[in-house]
Image (cartoon, rainbow, N blue to C red; front, side, top):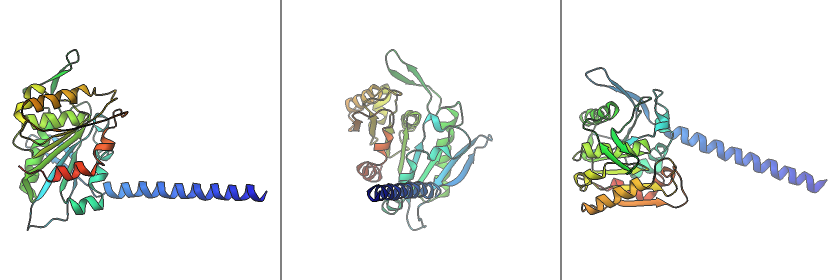
Length: 265
């Protein structure tokens, strides 16, 4: 009976510790994402884009990088909450904010809309950029210019990244605006390989899961090959035995963050 009692006591103590650490982790994540203020951008036509903004401990003496994060299809809507579900808590980590102070924005794509505007041929596994951007992408680019005018942003250090639908959007953004961004990190995305030469000057680090069932890794492999052929030197990370959630590795990779923040046009 005594042994059984101590075993039960040990199990209870272990369970309480597990609950404590889980709650602490959840509270920490919430505290980090709560640092992003709620905002919305309205253009001259009345079109609205919701976004969250993380401010560095900035002053007027210096200028700071701007990181643009494009979420995936599951985070679309108008709650201005879902865009912070994946990836953004890392940027709001106190150690990251101290080491890499930056403005970070996470806009929200409305439901049933897309960041990118491509024609996709599933037979040949190719994407063709359409002439005009999607309305959400048009608003994202306008928002960037609005923030440049409002905050001390270093226009030589504007970075863009996104996952899944946002990975598609990352390629779309840099292919339409090749002189705006200093670096790009597309995660499990796809782009127009025929336009690789136009973005060969942009430092790019591509991430994908080798067993991704949602976005075939061949899209990233093809873009890597096209960029290399165009004279670029892109980074490429393909995680073995990883499906669609390759962003879990990408955004917690300290080497990626160090690489990103040292890029400068």
